[in-house]
Length: 340
Image (cartoon, rainbow, N blue to C red; front, top):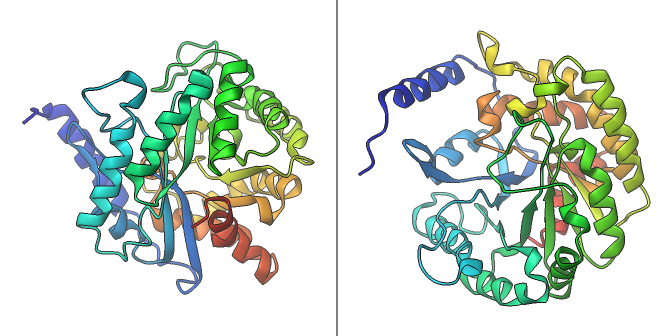
């Protein structure tokens, strides 16, 4: 067993204590939701497994959730291209064996990883994912988030312009032919790459993760209005692209720069909703409820707020809309996009 450093144990304990200091009752608990983006993992003492997700979501009427890849539990042997299939195998087995929720609900959709730069050769990887997913495999996330500031980084090897590369676009067309979707994760200044890919692959359902990646750290710290204006301009290019949907979430993780973790207690839902309303209004203007869905991005966003305050904020933002529009945002769009 891997020995977890004492400082890691202490940091995680303090984090859990901070989360427990936030007490908020679920808002409108009977309203059904689909969590369109979360992870499960066991990393050097930091676990987020089905029972932990279930505990976080227990106050809400969760119809289903979508697991999104996080470079975990890859196969240790075999061809390099096929190693990510191990993550789909792991999640499918994990939720079948250990979930207290209805098996159709937790990780009803699995979004895995495949190297789209393989071009047409990615077909074999997609076939293996589908076989491993037992009906849950719905698509691929191809994370290309990149910035010239070396202090802004992700766990993914990336460089500028990846989504414009011919082989990557050929691989994306393989997804479309199999009825699978593509999740993208870029930063705000890369959104034109997603537009280019969506135009080149009009039969592919493309999902923009984490509100399109506005940044508030590194060289972008203290430049929120400037970043917001650039993000908003870039987002409007998606308005006529019916094959693109937006995930609203990810704004509680450190990259967004709101620094919620520095608060003495977790932020209340009204605080979150007020801070995020300008982003939500732009997303609604561009995509409308039929092309927009909510994501928890837990446990990553768990670094900034509780699950209940997060979904209460989402419900608060959606409250002024019609019943049909609220239903689309809370569950309908995710159900359609991920074929749940």
